[in-house]
Image (tube, rainbow, N blue to C red; front, side, top):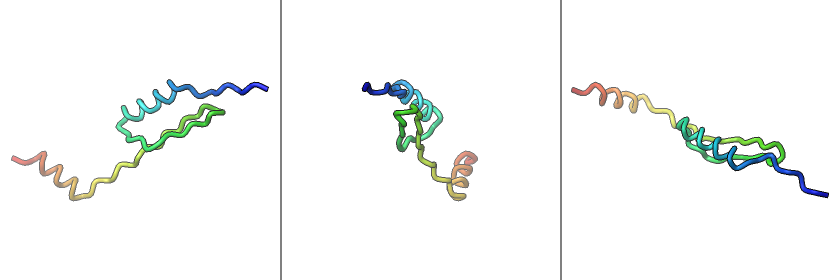
Length: 64
């Protein structure tokens, strides 16, 4: 009995990770289903800026 060929290709993962980085995402991990070739990229959730941080950014932009 021969082993079934994997539908996963390295280039597919490389493209998925490059696309995630190009979108500004920070990749935490990736998951690959070797049977289907499905690639799941898990990205970090950016921390929400506090109202104080937003005010300081606004203030810095409008400082004379």
